[in-house]
Every structure is written in C-alpha cells, then in structure tokens.
Length: 104
Image (cartoon, rainbow, N blue to C red; front, side, top):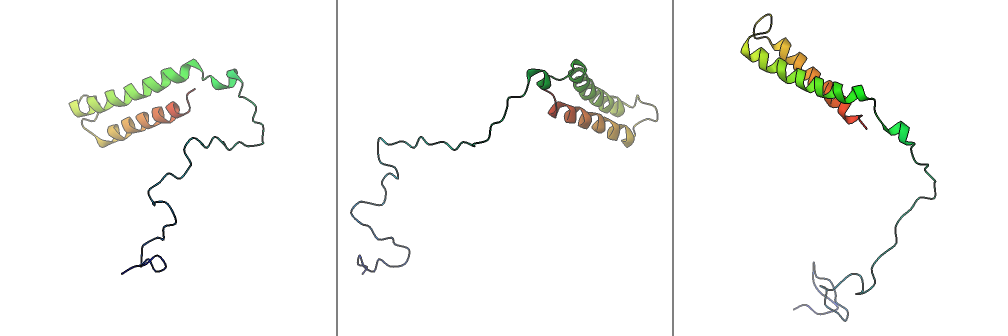
C-alpha cells in the first residue's frame, strides 16, 4: 500500500492537480525568440548568382553520365562492355552533383 509520503518506486508525488495537465498555463504562449546581438550584413545579389554555364554544365554532366551507362550496356562504346566506362559515367554524374550543390 503506497501513501503520499512513500509513493513507491517510479511513482511521482502529486500536489494538488493531476499529473496530466498543461505545462504552460492556458492563454500564455511563449513568444520569446533567441536572437544574436551580432549584425550580419545581407549578401549582395550579385554574389548570389551563378554563371550561366554552370547550369548548362550540370545538365550536360548528368546527361553524359546516363548516356555513357546506356551505351556501355549496349556494347557500342570502344572496348565493348567495360567497367571503366561505368566509373567514368559515375564520375561525371558525381561532378554534376557537386556543381549542383554550389549553384545559386
């Protein structure tokens, strides 16, 4: 038999209200936001734009990689079906992905 003074292991003592209530009182929302005291100037618009060739290079590298994979499995490339062509295709796709992460 557990009493209030000795609630037993794993049981919290209750004072007044049930344990399933709200943590913040109703009607009082927490509106404080954490802001830094440091001023960060906005980045100029000219610095945010990537050159036009970058978007074209991304698409070209992706398409080149896909075409090389398809042509390798068709056996059309010089040397027949070769894993080096697949490595080159994956390399082209990877470089295109790296360029895409730096595109603005």
